[in-house]
Length: 92
Image (cartoon, rainbow, N blue to C red; front, side, top):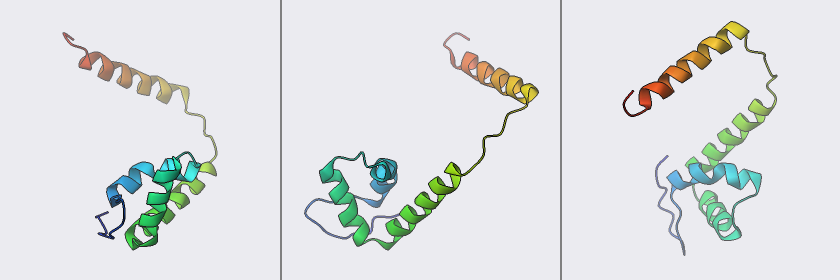
């Protein structure tokens, strides 16, 4: 996303929309930030498209079923993560 360039009393850039969208949709943004975001989205077609895609992704993800990870795969993944953590430690 690029900045749409819509002028306003206080500006918010397109790249900030992506960072704030989860909190916006959860209803946890402070009022003044929510109003800036809504003002920006009214005049920015790329951000409207991004928000619609984000909403669709969240909706689809909530409908996914939980799938049990096979025990062998879980153990292998944990081993990889442990090795990565150990390799990041100073002096390791």
